[in-house]
Amino acid sequence: MSDADLDLTDPVLQNEAELAFEGALRPKSLQEFVGQTRVRGQLQLLLTAAALQQRTPDHILLAGPPGLGKTTLAMIVAHEGGRPLRMSSGPAIQHAGDLAAILSSLVPGEVLFIDEIHRMARSAEEMLYLAMEDFRIDIMVGKGAGATSVPLDLAPFTLVGATTRAGLLPNPLRDRFGFTAHLEFYDESELEQVLARAATMLGLPIDGEALAEIAGRCRGTPRIANRLLRRVRDYALVHGGGASVDAVRAALDLYDVDALGLDRLDRAVMETILTRFGGGPVGLNTLAVSVGEEAETIEAVVEPFLVRIGLVTRTPRGRVATPAAWRHFGLVEGARDGSAHGGATLPIDDL
Ligand SMILES: Nc1ncnc2c1ncn2[C@@H]1O[C@H](COP(=O)(O)OP(=O)(O)OP(=O)(O)O)[C@@H](O)[C@H]1O
Image (tube, rainbow, N blue to C red; front, top):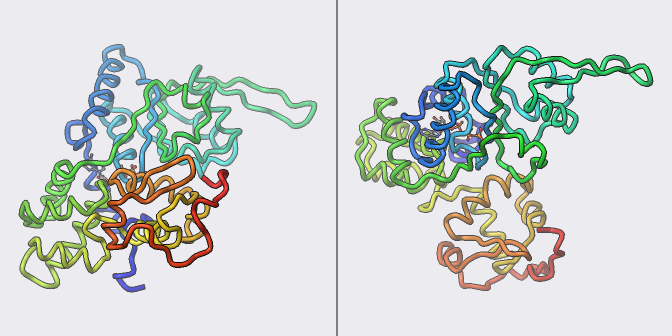
């Protein structure tokens, strides 16, 4: 695969150096954390009140698209309270036993971070209800008619759950979080601050105009901002002339990141809605099949940004392109490539 084929938004494709860089860049305190002013204020209050009362902070749910700082905030919750942090993820907890092993080994006050908590097994979810509420679990010993449940007390802990799809969490689980933070995409001035900090850490001299150009093209997402900055650094290194605004434009064009920050998958989704379905409405599953991607990825990663920048609206009948989308892609509104799939004929359950 050539560099130009790399999908800069795909975490799987990050190499070790990029991961190490990302780790080094994580702010360590709420004060260093850029943007999300409201969430920061709410978290600060929650953590300070817990510290004053010398108790573990309430459980916290962090919801929002990938790369907006959920893992970073979980680390900050642990760091600010001087508490150890245990990290796990929903896909790694496929049996109640997996969760029991983690919970029973927590030390008092520990912060347990479960990423993608909506992907945890249902049996584990049920165990978590009791653990969150009473710091206790019931362990089943034996099988069949002779099985008995043995209660096990746990050390008090704070659960920090992260999810890109808060709507998939069952209500009993959602209700047991003392606070839910909805992380929003960052605005350009916040992203410029994230980038300026990262540029300093990279030792990369870069001016305000160049920073603004990257900030406008990183999908409102700090993780992507940092990644694009590294590509600009590479470009400046190879071509000389420093990280000027021209270097930024050339580097990001090379990596197929357009002026709005749309990447290859965003564009595939938009072009499908616009040209195959005449602007929509088109259902999520049909869209996912058309672009060869999981419906979950379209819904959690692609769509929130397209809606936020006003290229797509969600209607009861499906996704619809806005006039701004037709303009951005230089197409005439209502044009279609002759596909037989008219958006208006889609079944309602495909939304
Ligand atoms: N508010 C912020 N200020 C500075 N840097 C940030 C901020 N938020 C995120 N970052 C940077 O962006 C990168 C991604 O953040 P993080 O891993 O916390 O996102 P995430 O929401 O957990 O993503 P995912 O859901 O994919 O795990 C990190 O390197 C972090 O340093």
